Each structure stands twice: as C-alpha cells, then as structure tokens.
Length: 309
Ligand code: NAP
Image (cartoon, rainbow, N blue to C red; front, side, top):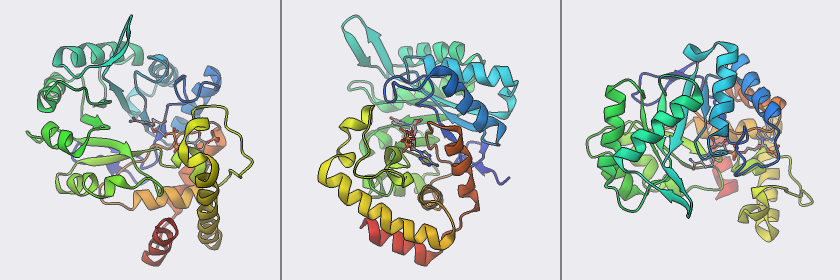
C-alpha cells in the first residue's frame, strides 16, 4: 500500500486515516455506543489504516481511552501513527482554552495516560487561546518533541496570523482546519502558506459531516450536532443536495461512489498527505479506503470545481 510522509515529519501513513470523533466523543455524536466505536477503530486498523485522529475534548478523554484500549488489545502500537489534541481546561465555572506552556505539558501527560502509550506521534494545540503568544505555545511542544514525548507538532483552528506566529521558528509540522468542497476559506491563505512551508494540511469535516457522502435526501432527519449545521438546513441543504447529485453523475461514470470522489479531490492537493473521514459504520471505513483506487483527471477536477463554484 502506498504510504505518504506527513509533511516533513518522517511519519508515514496510509493516506486514508480515521477521524475518531464518533468513538467515545459525546460532543458531536452523542448516540454511538462505545463497543461500536471500538469496532470502528478495530476495523480501520485491521484494514490497513494506520493514522487515527482523536482529541481530549472528544468525550473529555473517553475517545482517547477507547482508541488507546483498542490499539493495546490489538498489540499494534508500533504500527499506528496516533494524533491527539488538547488546549481545553475544565474548571468548575466551565471550559477555558489554555495554550500556556505549563498547561500544554500537563495535558500531553494526561493524554499519554489515556492513550496508554509513552509517546504521541502528532500532538495539536486544538484551539488558540486569547493570551499565549503562539510561538511560546509551540516552543513548549518543541521541548516535548526533544524529550521524545511527542514526534510532531500540530496546530488546529488557528487564524493565518496565529499560524504565522506559531511557525516563527519553523516548528509547526501540521495544520488541521475545516476543508471540503463546500468549505473552502483555507484556499485563500492557509493552504498556500502550508505548501510554501512544508506544513501538512489535514482537512477536518472532509465529507461536510456526511453531506458529501451522497446519501442524504431532503427528508433526512439528524439526531445529533448536525441538527444545527447551517449547510444541512432549509434552502441551503436543498441547494447542496442538488450539487451532490451533479457530482454523482461524475462518480457514476467512473464507477465510484460520491464519497470516494470527494475524498480523492482532497487528496490531490499538494499540502494534503492524509485525510481523516469519520464513520458511524464499519462499511463506511471499508468504502472510504477504496478512495485509493480513484484517480481524478484534470477535466474531472475542473468539472467538480464548477459544480461547487
Ligand atoms: P466527516 O468526516 O465530514 O463526516 C463523517 C460522516 O460521514 C459519518 O458520520 C457518516 O455519516 C458519513 N460517512 C462517512 N463515510 C461514509 C461513506 N463511505 N458512505 C456514506 N456515509 C459516510 O465529519 P466528522 O466525522 O465529524 O469529522 C471527521 C474528523 O475530523 C473527526 O472525527 C475529527 O477527528 C476531526 N475534526 C476535527 C475538528 C477540529 O477542531 N480540529 C473539528 C471537527 C472534526 P452518518 O453518521 O450519517 O452515517
């Protein structure tokens, strides 16, 4: 199987990874049982996926615990590139974002315990806080990297300005941000910056939370965070479904499914080495792996871009 290096990290992955928010992550998908969640991680690892993306905030550590348990049970720690994120501090008065060096070091130690490992392959600052200079925050992660506790440094949800500050010393390996056919803001500045600085870009919500997998209809009813997502409501939802139908014509001609064409469209980007579609069913993981068989021509890429304008 073809493996991609994530940017300049020396970490090699199957370009199809697994987004583990649904695994024990009760923030976005409150309705998925833990055994099904673990089964998703097992299916991914047994089928050649070796990159899993989790975070402390996915179920306040529960996702990390379930992912760590699954890897341990399969005895596959050496085979997996494990990514997690932190920056949330929970206090009696609620959640605060904290990028201070002391807190980042503490949260990495806690993630290590939950993941049942002594190193994290890729650790991201999940969200920027208001006060910490971003190069100082990344400096703390560089120390952890030098100590062998993490192997690569990521930031997520940073603005362009925050990313520049974070990367002042060239230490940022990976940026994670929202990117899909219907969410393309990062094309303006962040993706070009990533290419220029050899920062690997990991797109989240690659399937626009399921919309771009091509199975929803205007009668689909959502029972989780998708109830509140603007692109899945009212007029916007109807317009998006029409675009997905146009995309289906391209997929049909190729004998592929819509989701695979959508994921292949992401993977063709110079800055993108790996993608992390989420899943609720094991069959979705197997389907998404078939993206590796899809080659898009320049004409198809142009046609897809025209549909989504
Ligand atoms: P997503 O990958 O865009 O969509 C996942 C949904 O697509 C699944 O729940 C499933 O929907 C559907 N799906 C997936 N494969 C399919 C297939 N082959 N056929 C049909 N449907 C398919 O959204 P996501 O899972 O919310 O996000 C992906 C990952 O990004 C997360 O797991 C997380 O790791 C990361 N993330 C990071 C941030 C951040 O702040 N850094 C924020 C959000 C997410 P159904 O449930 O309808 O079956």
